[in-house]
Image (cartoon, rainbow, N blue to C red; front, side, top):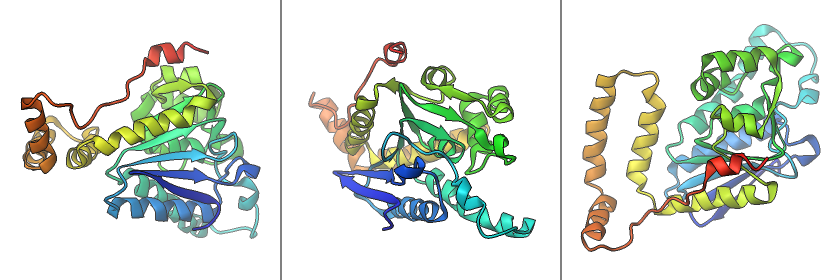
Length: 272
C-alpha cells in the first residue's frame, strides 16, 4: 500500500488515513487510486464492520492537488473527461460500500476533501474545521460525487449557495445545516469516531447492509418501491442468526448485542 494512504485495523474497524500532511492531504492520482482500492476491498472483507476516514496532521483534506493539475501540459476535453474516471470510481467505491463510513474532519476540508466527507454516512467535525466547495475559485466544478451528495445533505437551495459562492464555513454552520452530526474539540474527534465505529461491531451486519442500501435509494424512489424493498429486506433480516439471538436475549432480559454510544449533539455544537 502506498504511503500516501495509511490503513490499519482496530478490531472490526478499518481506519483509513490520508497521509500527505505536507500538502494538507491533497488528493493526487496515487491517493485517489489507493482509496478506491481500499474501499472496494472493504466490501468483500467480512471482518470490517465500519470504516473511519481521517487525515494525518492537522487537516482532513485540502481537495485536489492543484500543483499536480498544472503538470503534464495541456489536455483535450476528451483527455480531461477520461481522467475524471478515477474520481468517479472513488465516489462509487465509497457510496456503494454497505458498511458505515465515519469521516473525522479536522482542519480544512476543501473541494474534493469536502466531497469525500459528503460520501460518508456520518460526519464528525472538530471545532477548528473549515470547509468549502472551493471549485469555482479555480474555474472548476464540484467533483467526486458532490453534485449528487450535497443537495441531498443540505437541500438544493443551500447546495447552490455553497457551490456558487465557493465560500468557507465552519463547524457550527456545518452542524446547523445538517452536514455534520457532531462538533468536538480536536483532541476528542478521532476517539469519538472510533467509539462510534467500534459500536458497529455489535450491530446486525445483514440489517445494517440492507438499511444502508435502502437509505441510499430512498431519495430517488417512491413509497411503493420502498415498501416492496422493506418487505424483502425484513424477510432476509428476520431470518438471520443475529435476529434470532436478539429475540432470545430480549425474552431472557439479557443485554442487547448493540448499543449506540450516545452524545448530546446540541450541547456539543454550542461549545464553540
